[in-house]
Length: 123
Image (tube, rainbow, N blue to C red; front, side, top):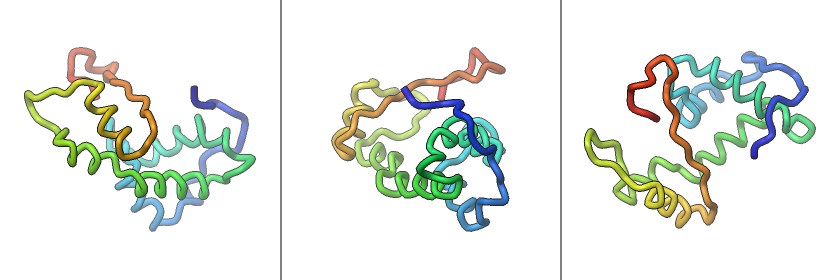
């Protein structure tokens, strides 16, 4: 389980430099809507506050970006020929295996359905 909803300081967009915001738009975009800032705010308020005794908000997002740089999951999947396709699907175990072989970690993956469009494809 991930720590969540800890007491701590609320998200402050002004603490993220324009350069860091540009980096996060690439490494940690909002895949549900185009409001990246709102997404980062929810991630900090839900999870980042739990790291606040060790990492402040800027450090939390810097390390998140560094982790993405270390293990670019998109590239890892692409190298395993797991890419978006209109009809092709992949087994959960194939996706986990591709990630695990490069990171030496077992990822926790889950599908997410948009509650506003319950019959649409999951993410």
